[in-house]
Image (cartoon, rainbow, N blue to C red; front, top):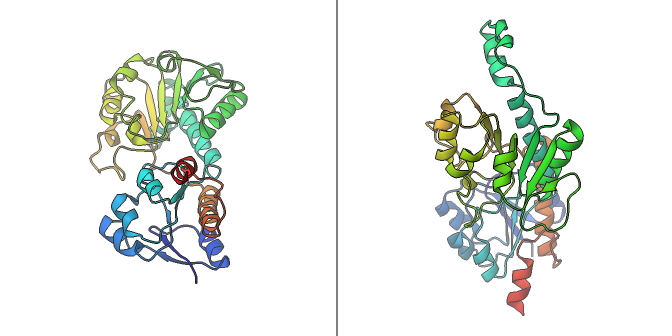
Length: 323
């Protein structure tokens, strides 16, 4: 009997081809409304999902045969992990597929902001060549980059900044006790905001981190400092960020993620010129997307083959429940 994999939103051919070669059937979802997800998941053994499909308690409980929920990507805020664990369903992600891609995107933000690439381009297209004498860029050499969250992506950003651009790197992560090469760890997150010329955020979205960065933190930053978020929009109070940019409390920002996705067309960030915005695309290089689809498919196969998945995020909880 063949297993059936539900893919609410289409993925790259690499993942689908892998599933087919392993003998699995799969179906692509019609849309990602809760009603459609509940209807279409009923007869499925696995879900391979991107970020926008909300795999909540109702969806999980509609799938009586479900054995694994494989995330295409790293963030898990669209999956009810607690409910999946109660049902003894593995939840996996793809931590090795896109870390470097996101780190490159962060550095692209930092470079574009520090070198004023967007305003330079805009003014030159209007014929304002003399703008070069009014809008000077900022050196990265010897500037301080503060990193909040020193997981895979945070460490890669630190490495690129330190070795590639001779930046000083400080980092905050209360869950990592060991030292990290070329990163000066600080014990108080406030030091990141007061001491940094650039700040890069790398926290997951949880109940504990939701809205954790807001008015207080932006007020501590230097007026010349820049803020970058390619993690999760909900970690930052978007209204407070918008106000800090409007009032020029900070020099600018690079934002890839939003509190609501997709953001509304009247999002006030869209009207500001000191922020660079991208549509939650930091991980979506051609190669990164291919790896995410393949790695997620590999996790599905491992579970349905009776193996322990390589990147299970709830393995300890499942073992504890069994015991």
